[in-house]
Image (tube, rainbow, N blue to C red; front, side, top):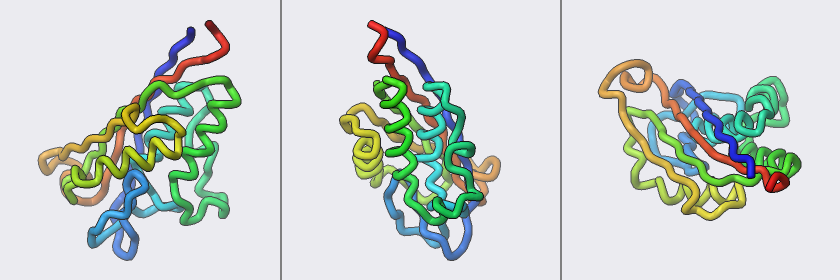
Length: 162
């Protein structure tokens, strides 16, 4: 059986007048992430990791910010579409592990909801999705509160090659 792994990274600046959506969860905060879609850095990083593992490019090529169809769309939609791409190529998702990098707000109270949303969009059990967060101790754009980033790694397996 062929196993593959992929990594993903995404970052967005924080902006006034936007909702903060991370892992498909609307988090109460005075600013949100700027972007064409809902700018969910976590789901974007996961989508990139899955597309990369399958050798299918990246989120920017598949869901370009020049396409009005993706304007303000929930990024969980991206995960559902990535799931379909993987299915076409005969891959199943083994697991997803991700970290959100943000000085604030504190995200731990929302991890289970994020994992539930992500696992639902990907069609896998919630115990195959792990979400965590860290700060950068005041360093860089995430540390000074200018933005939020996420990194993800996943593994997939090809179900046609036994």
